Amino acid sequence: LGISSKLEKCFKKHVWLKSGGSLVIEPTEALTVIDVNTEKAVQGKRNKEHTFFKLNKEAAVEAARQMRLRNLSGIILIDFIDMEESAHVEELLKLLEQEMEKDRVPAKVIDMTALGLVEITRKKVRKPLYELLGKGKELANCLGQQTAAVVIGSDVEEAVAFSVRYGADKVYVIQGEESVSYTHLTLPTKRIV
Image 1 (cartoon, one colour):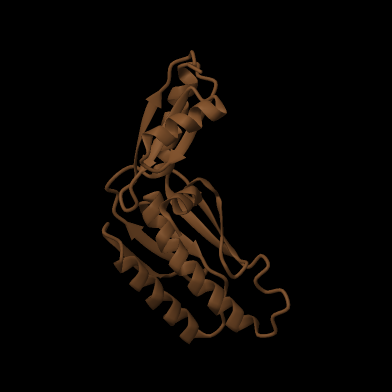
Image 2: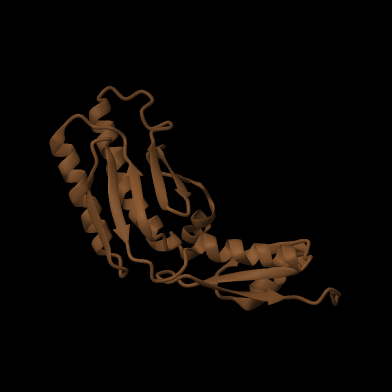
């Protein structure tokens, strides 16, 4: 996947997995919750335990990636699909720890709670992407601008062309893969054709 497709996932609550399952990512002021759902992944499968284990492993990899891309920090809880075999739980936690080691921001997998929630802490280095864009949208609304667009990538010409095509007053250009930042372009109200 390219940077555009990865960052597009940053704006969606649902992140679909190749297996047919999904993650639902809910950031709040106190913590972030990531819920793993089976969706279509279990249809027609006989060995549910094996299917849940496979889906949870895929979800662990994607959850770690989403934490990096969205720059989620603080307390993060992941609600994996319940598995009966303790060996599967241990292997899942080891995989998640390995994926979190890829993160440049200090992060730690604490443990799985009695309720089956995996606790993670991730140091806050910058504001999460949803906060940055949320504040930008609030500012655009306060200034009375009717439309704002988000362009993923670093090509300013592409951002301006996108704005002209969709009639946006303001364009947010998101750049970077490991540390996501954004800038905005305020465009003139009269278009030159």
